[in-house]
Amino acid sequence: MISSTARDLPDHRQGVLDACIRQGMFPLMMEHLPAVDADAIKASLDMVDKADIYLGIFAYRYGYVPRDHDISITEMEYERAVERKIPRLIFLMHQDHLLRAADFETGEAAVKVEALKKRLSSERVVNFFKSPEGLRAEVINSLSQYRKSDLTAFHYISDIPRPPEAYIAHPYTLPLSKGLIGRQDELALLTEWVVKPSAEIYQARIMNIIAIGGMGKSAFTWKWFNDIAPQKMKPLAVCGKTSECERLSQSDLYRMSLSDSITA
Image 1: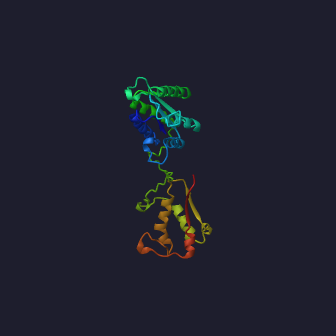
Image 2: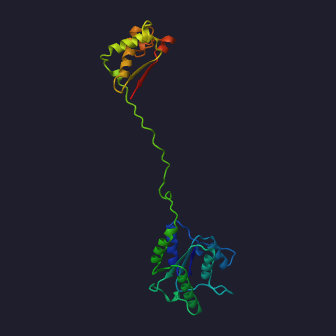
């Protein structure tokens, strides 16, 4: 809530308004009040009651003193802030500030405003300003300690999902191979497992082709299935050439369960 005398400080109040907005705060001030069926005292104190921070600006005018009261509305606002125990930021006009004659109080009001400023200086650490621009800078600096940091206000922060596990699928190049050289004993053993009932290996239900990576397990089984199996087993489901695609019996398909595995 911005509290001050209004007639002598219009430029200062506008600068303070801008300072509050720059710090992400919306100030309560008399200029923003609509026409209401209430007296000036109630309207002013209601603003203090709604405020989170009291911001007082004091120059050389004491302000309006309502009938049957001894203190001005400006001092009443400060008293209410003290009662509520909310933060009170006090800014006093420096003696080097340029002034007009109309900006000074005389008589009893001048005594009261000096007494009030003396009290403010004893109760709080105050800042002094020499111009509307200087006051604006002081308010920005003072309000910075009360500003709540919100990183999303100016920069959108999305919930970036964790990246998936790396997956590399190499193109399968075996169909382009011209042929497999060697491994004749192993090719014969694989043929016996499938088509020779008298062979000892024929009794095995599953055959594992095991070797370290890069030894040619896939090339070996590819060679046997495409080049040897069609000659040794008939009928056989061979779809490498669409014209030769035939159907295996259920028992033969079961025996053709090849497991191509790797050991480290």
